[in-house]
Length: 276
Image (tube, rainbow, N blue to C red; front, side, top):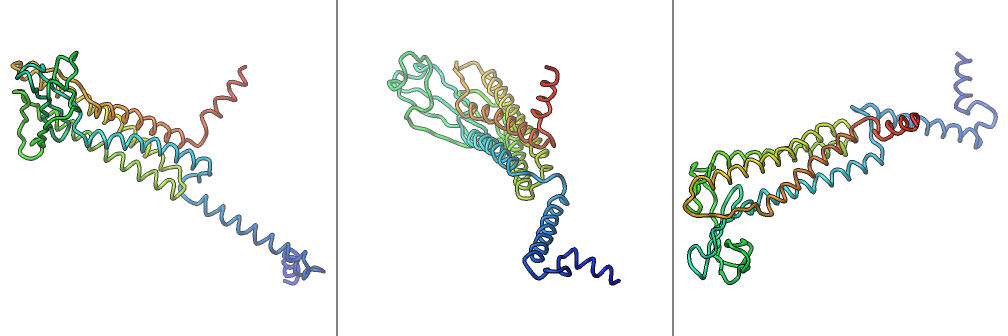
């Protein structure tokens, strides 16, 4: 027992000559710092998955910024009604005014334009950004289930509803991906990056698929009646969604690469150096 007691005091620097001096205090403080560092290390590695470094955290925030850009573009495109523009020839009704229609997922607007404001080289009425009287109304697809009529043409509500549901589900996946990234940054766990990457990649695919379904609905609208000749074009809301789909998929791929326990570049470069 006494041998154990003296051995413990010798380790702590308290039982040897001069233990009360600065040498013993330094030994005690070094031992306490070592224990504290060991305890912190143990707390960080006890969580699920490896802990992230400051460099990894910076890369995750940068990839998250890319994903946020895609989310903002998606919200801008889904919330606006400039998906498609339908316009007859500018002299179809009379020589002073003409009508043009632009619509999106939720509502459509009919705008009366002055022919004098239209570009003389343009054959159809428009574009819809020109000043004029506008009359907007929400579609009744989601309430009474009625189709909308534009220039004596009838919309296909099934295609419009499918495009809207895909866009809404993509927004839900974006929210889930953002929650996973927030958990990864707050808990410092790389495991949450994998479900976040899946959410953002799927949301980008759904956005692009929503655009394809909406374009098919526009073609079905034009084929429903041929009484009024119409010129159609996809507007800037579709451009926002197309860019959003690509940006979201890029963000998802970046999260997937950051979730790997090793860097693909560091693993490929040594092989190339060895082969050369």
